[in-house]
Length: 84
Image (cartoon, rainbow, N blue to C red; front, side, top):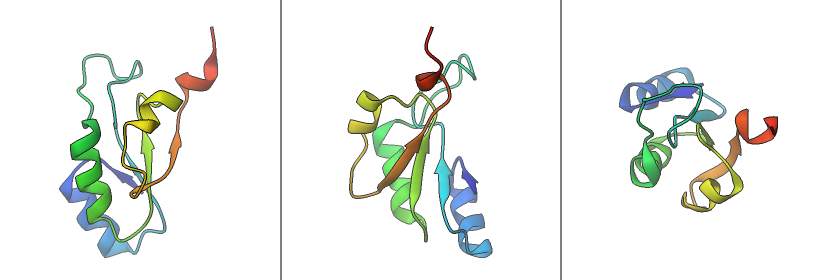
């Protein structure tokens, strides 16, 4: 389930989600000008979920290290793997 804010957390609870993609963790090239959640807001959403949280949006190995490991079940990316 995609989670972008508190409404997404409520939806995850209501639907009994198995995993949530919490995004955008950081600014991303696929959504120019859109702000990312940042580590603190991302963690608050992940902590409130009834299921594991996977970070999406602006993710790289370095960005993943900025998120709290206690709440980070994994991370997903498109651009990080695309190369030049």
